[in-house]
Image (cartoon, rainbow, N blue to C red; front, side, top):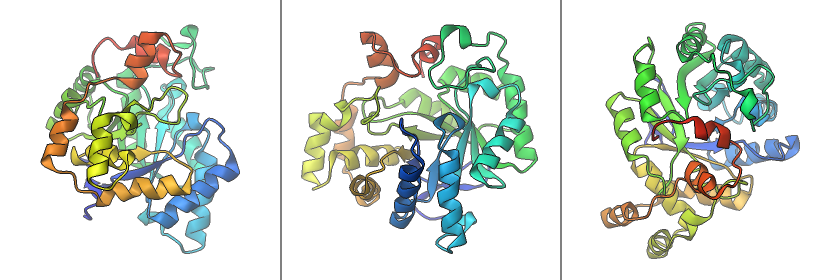
Length: 316
């Protein structure tokens, strides 16, 4: 296992630096070009989801690279996610994802959110009437395990699951989740969740590791924080590199999203940064702000996942 990979409880390895393919525009040409740039820079983990709409474009770019001999399928790691309106039939949903990707399997398939939506809710901003009160996580997980048994994915996991929801899942899971992908950055450090996941050998993967900068619901608070900026200045690095290296130092993988070549290179450069123990202690002193759930719900701004966040009855 290389030092830029983590071994999951499923036995497979996963690159710790992931490239996220979500964009509000979801433009085919832009997405495919960004994936090609990411491959050239050494990215090997690609994150998508049905609801992003980027599965076809990611699949196109990866298949082109494979056909040209740039990479082998075994050299890349593809993650996709089960949308909440497909909870009753994960197997069919994954087969559709594979058709859109043009692949025989994904490396990791995640339950995107711990809630169910009605069949018609195939859009990222659910309304109150879209939620399915008969959602059965146990049945959903049995479907996920079936996907694994049929070889349509190498590992299964979850996303946006709180500590309580992880423990509940473990009560009935035959196969435990390999990954829990959650928002995590220096201003939302997820200490309790990381501890519980660590006890059960569930890898924590961080999305929005820079605080969601660039997204409609994100913030620049992480990158603008004086502590992050001071550490960056000391190491002749960028604030983004400091924030990303902090996540990696906690044993997490990070999913970064940028279609800009300069920032793509800057982000992956975090792998070469060495933070001092004092740097990590200083980051622990930063005030925590839960960007998506906390800041946006507190000030009344509408996050794309506000309705889902409001259903949470425990701390993530």
